[in-house]
Length: 594
Image (cartoon, rainbow, N blue to C red; front, side, top):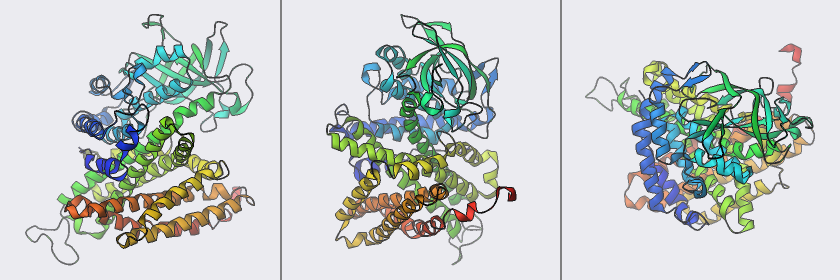
């Protein structure tokens, strides 16, 4: 069975030493209590919960899966009890407003919690993750009555939140959806239609479900401009807050999936179910994106979480497994063979994994800090810049962190050799579980297209220019530091390469309609590696400053950073060549030739 140890030391380094997050957060209205001591206490408690409660039921949950019987879903053994403990601990409402019973803590801290929960038990983490997105959506777009009726029970974990978008004929193109909403004449609507791939649509861990459903009103225009959003509970809620009669919303079946088998995925049938409009008519898609943007960052966190668990287990295995001898002679002559950690290929896989994970964690925390600043800062200009950074980084984190998450879990499985392919060790579960993260909440190609087709040009390029300004501030701060040159020089080259490639791509888009689509995925990876290098420059600076303490943590950090700069970042050179090959190599072949 795989094991998990919360990486709290590295999290503290990123939060406190790299970004001084507590100083930033406590200066924001509403986050005055988010001190370094509080952050550390929350991390410690969550680490205990993840290691002692959630991780032990991860593999058994995968083996047992969810069971469906006449509309009812039973979660695997131990999940209901773990969820009760999770909810009673206040973890469902960590960032929700105290007005509704939440703790009002920042999203920066929520990221760290989500990573640990996902590493311990990815399937489990999806249930509260969806509820948190529902809380955010209702808080932003719900009426006062909707907020008071539903949010407190979502915050307490008594009720589950879901998002119901996809239909059998309409996947990523939501403009094709057909679900209908007919006015009942009393301010409510009759919702009719079928939704598929609905995570947490039905289960036995909560008393009620709050479905956010996209549907069309009778007079709705065609396409995405004609979509409205409705709140549809499983049980109607009485005036006193108690549960009333059953609504006409039910699970018709559950999916049999490649992975995340302890997280139920439902086909949901709405047969004239009573619903309430959320926000304005025909503006439902924009409202739902409030939740989707939160969930996209959350899914990126899932990618990091699986990579972390895979890395931890592969490293432990590599230290114990003996096979062959080191090329330069026996390192463990008292044993029949050396540990496989002496072999360059094994070290390469593990160092690649570690160098990516630590850069991703730093970038995710930096992005979440910007989320909090954009939400709470008192200066409009500062909020705008932070919002720009959040918007620009959302497709990067969702796509790159899940692409690399899949790549890393596969590489770490390979470290185990044949044992990695055997269920007993748990590595094949990580590979199966992480694979969905590249697909749901908008496929990674959709994220890449959003980056090249929308984010780069948004506000006349303001987002990209703003990022370059942030990067230049870091480079200015590093000027004159010869000890940082081995990090700064390759990073500056990568930034110039990214700028030149961005300019080239913008010019090509004017002449070739396929240019952006052909380049999107490679460009996003190039972009990601460049901003990862930025994180490594900043981490190296802090590690060098602290290296005189004799703490091995900082020397390790520097060695991993050097690996990234010399072995990973050069990948941007080949990516530039691939991008500039254009669309012709992939579009020239006629359809009949496939």
